[in-house]
Amino acid sequence: MESPELVALLQGRRVAVLTGAGMSTDSGIPDYRGPDSPPSNPMTIRQFTTDPEFRQRYWARNHIGWRHMHATLPNAGHRALAQLERAGVVTGLITQNVDLLHTKAGSRAVVNLHGTYAQVVCLQCGHTMSRDELAAELERLNPGFTERAEAVGGIAVAPDADAMVTETASFRFLDCPRCGGMLKPDIVYFGESVPKERVERAYSLVDDADALLVAGSSLTVFSGYRFVRHAAAAGKPIAIINRGLTRGDDLATVKIDNGCSPMLALLADELPAVVDVTT
Image 1 (cartoon, helix red, strand yellow):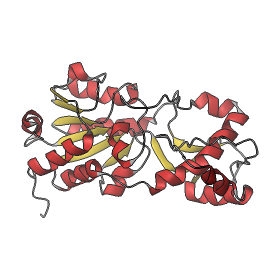
Image 2: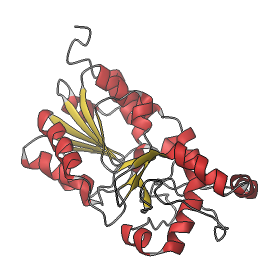
Image 3: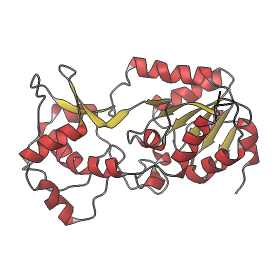
Image 4: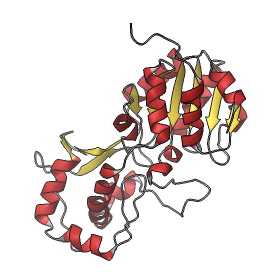
């Protein structure tokens, strides 16, 4: 498999990368909008904050789903981007994913645009706790729940660590141990804004690079698409690797309709280091 125009575009350039859910499909996490994706209705912040029954159902499903996401391993695409960062080709990475797979693969300059599954935050006082810590408390409140849900089999986990679990009416969830406020995964839900400081860090990654590479995002959501527009406005070349159409195709210098893993592995092989990382 060859893509000379992709290699030629990025050759000798310092590259900022934007990744979406299509990046993690080879790790077994389904995409929301890919050509083969099942219908999905991601949760909105309004649903979570206004409906206690919805919140109960969410925590029951997340109690199962986060473990599956926690156990997921990076794929060849994640490893290729980490390799390109070590070589000085990739200067920073913005991900719309909450699965921490880039960090697990060894990427260091990562902006987790939409947060991560591994932390929980209180909406009232801002207290944070690890998802692991919360899991122990939920296990204590719901003995045997995990085993019963797993026994049914066929757990499907969405990109936000929400698992398809049907029996949730008896599930007991937790409020903030510090103030009694509402706990929420530290994930940006639909209808919620990305923290300003995080957006500014992402913009600066794009500003400091010579080119932008988009991998595995349809760019449907503005929180990712804005960085493509920003790069285009600055006259920077843009490469997109994605299965199917994206909202940014008309701004792309090169568009590759393919999976992320094979194309990124190709780039890792073809692009030489642009800096001497040993000095």
